[in-house]
Length: 185
Image (cartoon, rainbow, N blue to C red; front, side, top):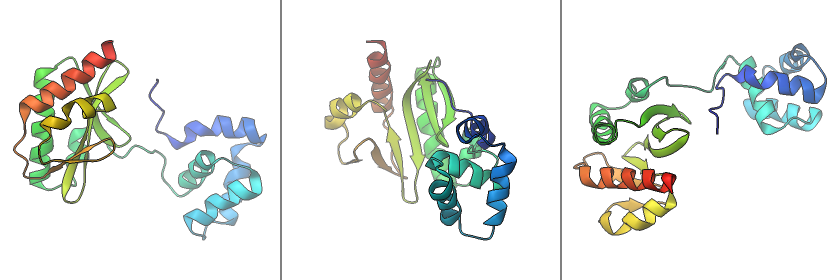
């Protein structure tokens, strides 16, 4: 799957084609509703003009000044707003993974730091207020590693780890290795 263009104006050709009007028409529609809350602005495009949620959001957010959905360019940018403890934990986790699997590419996708092999995501992470969520991406990995997660909270697709987690390097390396193996099967 190709990476999506994070620029909001990437949707404009499809909007023009589907609705048969140049973007200036839609910018003018937005201008008529500029002082309204976001959800009301989106509703105007959806209910009065037949826009999909994605197209309505692209126009409204673009007109409101958000030209891209990308918030972070790299891991450093992602970590900037987090505490030194969270930064250290995330850097340790990714350091272990990249050290064990240098062929993996570290990227920002869905505004979260991820690692992938080719086009397939293998591992992701998200920092929350009181914990970090790690995601091996393949539900088989979660199922197989459940016995080794001792005491960690398991969500549907993620594992919740405390900020003071003593990083289990072997667990991380094995989980990512299993994810890579599943991609290759």
